[in-house]
Image 1 (cartoon, rainbow, N blue to C red):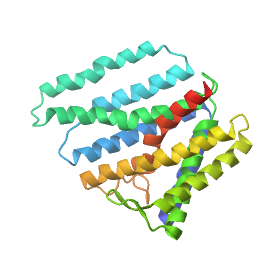
Image 2: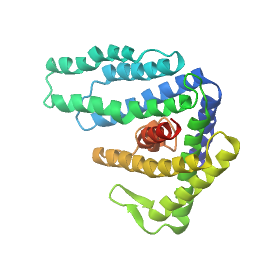
Image 3: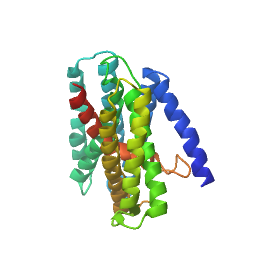
Image 4: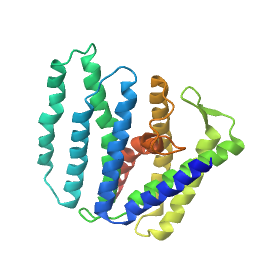
Length: 269
């Protein structure tokens, strides 16, 4: 417990620093974080005898993230995404020259890595540019993280105190409906407190964001649990003592970030 608390404290400081220290620090930190999470995903998948094209995928993922950053920071034309086409389809060609029994499983899980890890991190990153286009604003990314942390804290405390009814026992036997609604309550309360500081954001918009973060963040947690159970893996990695890997720490973001971005985009524009 002590190790877990120390890791959480220092990692939280680093994450907050990455949000507050400007667009380029924000870009660099979440580029590294997204690549680390993708690497963990491929490492777990290999335990099942599947051989995804990790090196090609890591290069393509870095380009996807950097092109997303260039679009926001430098107003690059989206046609530059066409640069990814030959790299991505080289996965099919290179599989021709391998002597694998399940070539299309290798190909499929390579693309699943992009969809499951890289794309959600790109959506989260884009929250920083949702309000002012090319100008970075940390209010939405910070709000997202605070609401997610409030949800996790509330779910843990209410689950420990009142938890009796299992939420989804097949994939996560410790989660309860009482914890889920406790997390919803604390996250909505946190959204009101955030609205007192970020006055340009409507409190109702933030409350709606809190509901989505809790609902889809919980689903993201369950999806990662399903992945680990299917592979008989306890943690996605060991880089965060007491917490496991990056995927373990950001599983809620992976499903919630695209949904929250779509919600805010439609509401604000």
